[in-house]
Amino acid sequence: MITSAIPASKRTAYSAYKPSGVPWLGDVPEHWEVRRLKYTADLINVKVDGADNDLPYTGLEHIESWTGRRITPNGDGTSDGQANLYRRGDVLFGKLRPYLAKAHAADSDGICTGELLVLRPKVVRQKFLVDYVLNPDFVAIVDSSTYGAKMPRANWDFIGNLPALIPPDDEQRAIAAFLDRETVRIDALIEKKRRQIELLQEKRSALISHAVTKGLNPNAPMKDSAIDWLGQIPEHWDAIRVMWVAKLESGHTPDKKVPEYWESCTIPWVSLNDTGYLKEHDYISDTAYHVNELGLANSSARLLPSRAVLFTRDATIGLSAITTRPMAVSQHIIAWLCGEQILPEYLLRVFYAMGQELERLTMGSTIKTIGMPDVRELAIPLPPVPEQRDIVKHIEAGTNSIDTVSSAVAKSVELLREYRTALISSAVTGKIDVREEVAS
Image 1 (cartoon, rainbow, N blue to C red):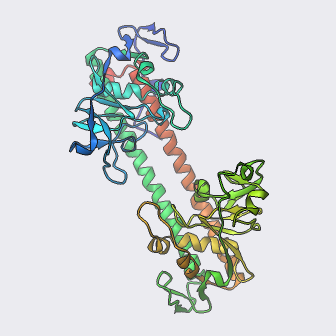
Image 2 (image 1 turned 120 degrees about the vertical axis):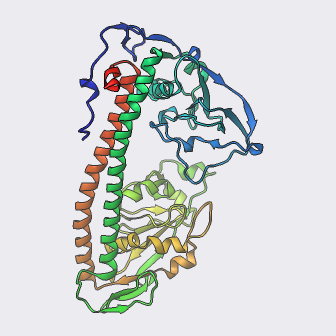
Image 3 (image 1 turned 180 degrees about the horizontal axis):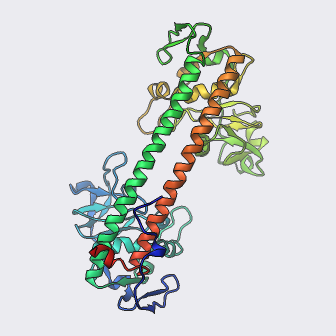
């Protein structure tokens, strides 16, 4: 909840409005101008060789969606081919997948990917233009014009002919000052809640790790497990390789060049396309892709029984889940078929606790993987089965409580983001008059 901010719907409106002639803009302040964007900002199309240029590079990945902030994931990045030249004061707008709402106010000279349009404001201020093109209605209209199924893009011919609003310069300054002040407040709240979610996830991980490595009895005598990542474990537990208590299975991908293997497919087939789901769920009932019996018969994959514990060994390592029905898996997935000595739910939680150990075993800089020899050597703590059941129940109760709180905080973050976007939209389309708030 934002106690320091006034909802956009309760803020002061302008005294007089006029029809904009644009359905998605509606009425606009009477004294504002409406022009096409191409008369408001120039498209700058200066190409340079990115590989031979020392200016900082901006890709789509360096711009945070909806906020316009520049971020630096995995370093600053470079360009090996042609790039667009931009200068301080320009606005960069993403034409690839416009629904991602990538726009940035350049505060220095640089070069950028060709997927960013370089706009040079003429009759509006840079900050106002950035906020305007991040208006959800503007983004939606641009996105509706895209072409190309896999890499949808918009073009300048369409974007440049979209309407743009031009308030008087003093109002542009007032709107910019108002939005700077309010978005700082909102962003601080969002960051505080993000940190709260991080702490909850750390608490969740610690709960699982402690339960599967130390047990539930704080007074239990301990012994050295002789396994580095485990340390000490309860004296009556064993520390053994997973493959001694669960059968190791791997998979395969039926030949994609044979259409018959991929027709009328009904058999769930777990692949790296399911990693997003595996990351969020303990059980998996369906998959992004399916195979058929002919495909399985002509590959080294096979149909595995339900209650197999899956484990990703490539790309994002160690994502795990339990199957709820017979499935096949790709070569990127390990499946463990648990014997009588171990419960699938317990093994699943042990994998959750093995993050640092799995990271240690990971090879490769581009595509990470764990080799099969290391997979066969994976060692885990093994309590008696009744104790495994108690540990699973304890973890479920604790994580359910944490997840409930975490979901509530995540929902409040989403509401804050929606409020932020709505506030910006209301200000740059003239639905609210913020001049007095800035003056006060």
